[in-house]
Image (tube, rainbow, N blue to C red):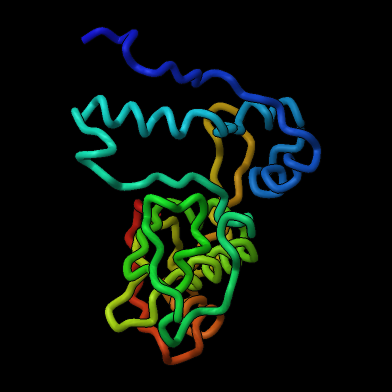
Amino acid sequence: MDETSFPRVELDERPKLDAQELAFPKSQSGITDDDALNRHVKHSSGGVQEFWQLGYRLFNSSADTFPVPFVAGDAFDETFLRAVSPYYTLPKEPAPPLSSLTNLTPLLGLVSAIHVSSFFHLFDEAHQLQLAKSLAGLLSPLPGSMIFGAHGGLPEKGLQIGEDDQSKVGSYMFCHSPESWGELWNGQVFECGTVNVEAIWKPGIG
C-alpha cells in the first residue's frame, strides 16, 4: 500500500504553551520549569480529523458506509458543551440530526449511553466534578441510560504519586475511590437517590 496516499500528521510538532496554559499542567505534574514542561505536554489541535480520515482508509470505510459523525471539542468549553443541571424529565426539543452537529449542546438530556475512559484522572478533584456535571447534562432521564468507562483510581480517595522515568520528576494524580466515586455521582452531580452507581477498584489498573 502506498503510504503517501495517507494524510500526513506531524507527531513531533509541539507548539509552546504560554504561562496561563502551563499553569494547570504545572500544578498536576510537579514540573516547574517551562521548557521541561513544554517537552512533556503533547499539544493536539490539528491532527484529530486527519486520524479520523485515516481510519476510513485503514478499514476500507467511508462517511457513507460508517455514518458516525466525529465532533471534536473541549468538554470544559461552554461553547462546545454547555453545563446544565441533569435532566429528570425528557427535553421538549427533539434530537437533532447527528450529521448537523458542530458541538454537543444540542444533545443535552438526549444521550442514552456515554462512554468515557482513561480521562477523569487527568484532572484535579474540582475539574473532575466539573466534568462529571457537564456529562450528566447530556444524559437522558429515561431508565437504563448510563455513563460508563474506566479511569485511574485508588482504594482510598487521594493523590497517586508516581515518577516519570524520563524526567525523574514526581507526578501527582488525583484519584477517586469506589466510595467517593459513588458519592460524586449520587449526591454531588445527580440528586441523591436518583441514580445507581457501580464502581470497583482493581490493583495494577488504577
